[in-house]
Image (cartoon, rainbow, N blue to C red; front, side):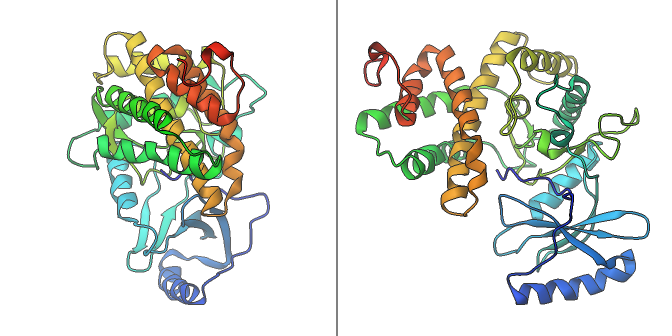
Length: 366
């Protein structure tokens, strides 16, 4: 999971600099090769964005359109999944970047540019949520899931879910909060993780984008006022897997960077469930059971992301991500408070966060 900022331009494009002269030389050689065939304007090259991984994105103009360059050092980033999933999504009818040139050995890629505005950028958090755009996201998700086939993408299995959950005690609790768990607390965590994984894996598998959220959906140059048949673009899909059908809708409605009230989340989730069921996707016949599963899947994601954001801060020097930690803690507490089997985890989280609770509910007495 990368949680990448979208490769969209800033108000004033950042100048292009290189920390490694050797990599700059490799880039110059590759750019010289692709410049002529694609009529690229060298003087338009600028930094579009960097992200939570080692990738960064550049923008460059041609006579008819803007293009995007991915700079992904091959010793740190594997671009093969990006190319594979881009092809799968395009075959499914989704709007994704087209790979125009790929220097696999050196990690440079020339891509079509889907546009400058993400769904996140057109949303006004102080205004009512844009329901039509969320419903387009739901349609895109259903279309992607309908293309699913086993054995194509890596499985989102017990081992991967466990590794992701372990990021929470390793990086968030241990490194960020500087809390050492005792044996009883560790058992609470282990029991909760086992229950979360069992619940999540009880649901059928489909293709999972793994970061299906407004930052990774492009609305195009028209913003909210788009042409009727224009599709949402999809980015940041290189970590896609084959896993629980609850994951991507949980990611969309329990966003890492944006929160809506529960009535809106329920409304969109019900509409997704109805469309998915009508399309023959395995979402079950009981919405209540599906919504519970979505909450448990969302809990797994938020535990993982809290660990990732702590790691980005402490290991990678990117402290801006931890600013959203209170959102994750609120998500975790809301979900844990609704299910008796998760109450011990709730008390542990509150203990780690230093949140005062009534004595009768203090950790260790649940």
